[in-house]
Image 1 (tube, rainbow, N blue to C red):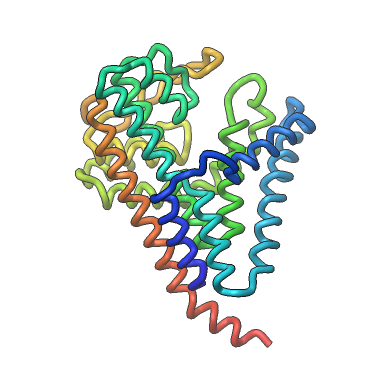
Image 2: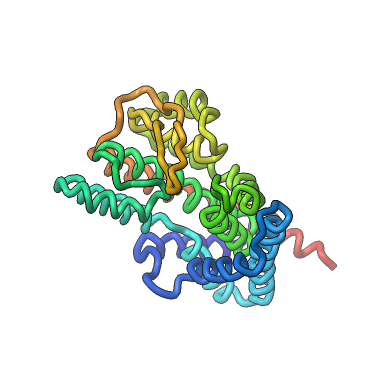
Length: 316
């Protein structure tokens, strides 16, 4: 447990300092494998989608479990956990992309802001106004703080390297096939539902930490409790609503996705519509939430360490 705590802390530090690598990212490699598996297994059916998710999530988790159990020395265990944590987290990259969009908006370059926004969201961006671009950034930062930072720490603290890998695999598959469109409505169902399930602890903790870190704590708590159930995602809604209340803005509205699918998201928060000036405060709240989530996961591991040691002594 102590090695796990140190590994989680080092992995979070590596993400803050370096972010995602430009080449040879493990998650990108998993994505290539998922694409190849989809070509082989795809059919417009839930049963094929269940098999697809089980093979990829189960296989990657089994490999992580094998590697974790074969790692005997504390230093090697710390290194493995730190590497898995760094690969699973996305806080620095999220920060970088949000600030890049903000920089373009701040200089009035709306076209480049729209193009850069595609690194953060899957919605159509070509016709968005500057304020709509800002809303998309804030919603993405909020959602991915829960998904790509807090949830990873939760599963890292609870289950170590296998937990980190299982969560990141599920989250990656959801991003790839968990869409409401003709191709993936049935095939992507299992991946999307499993990601919803495994994301529940992280999204709730992210909302709690957002309330704690909020400039307006009462507003964050009120928006979370009142508005989260209106969101189509059980996890994104909780974090987006708490961010909206924390920052005193109103999120939600009409989203158009590629393929001309539209969704009208219910309002979240009581404040004014967001603008580009709200992106830096959003990034600061997200960073603070991530740091506290890291410290919480480390604390859980350290508190569990004496319990694990006593259990090992009792094992004949």
